[in-house]
Image 1: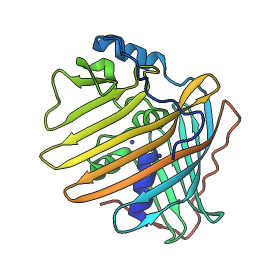
Image 2 (image 1 turned 30 degrees about the vertical axis):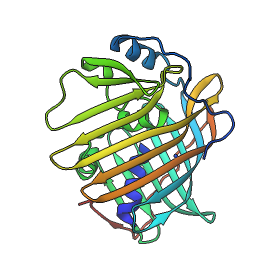
Image 3 (image 1 turned 120 degrees about the vertical axis):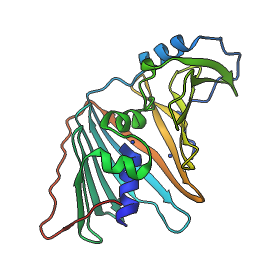
Length: 257
């Protein structure tokens, strides 16, 4: 359960169609250079101070599966807070800040306190607070302005690939042509046979802005596959939020290996 909940938390930090979602335009797509696609992507960033959402999560690693409900709250650039429930009972909480990752779970009475390095090593992907926050908002995990990219059109979306790839690491970004929100992020480490795919199945309108509705995450390593689906059921933004978090006494500290 420790490993499962940790992966759930990281995937939430690092998703059934419904009314209000937006589909990819079937009409012709204007050819744009990479700089323009990237500029439009950042111009369409979701503008908020706080978020208070309710989500449905599905987890399946081929051996076991879970489908809890959760509350996800964010104070922009400061705090990500998650409370996981099943059958109305709080099973776990996580509190993420730019400096620290904390969580506890009640089934085994364990808790974790640490930075992103240990979790990054475990998932095989360099994580920090900003990347986790961006993933949840439908934005690129990486700063697209810090590298040179080539742009093309494939399957009715914009495709961005680095002109010069990082050593031992491959990246691919697919972006909606109408909203310039992320459609898919794909990260690969061929030598270690690791793949991380984050697909944004649909978006919804929150206020007058585009916000993810469903996020599907697939992590593959060798023959092992883990799938996590996040479905935002309700999204409220710029409301007053709180982040209650206290590790119960008597819990045992754990490390991730």
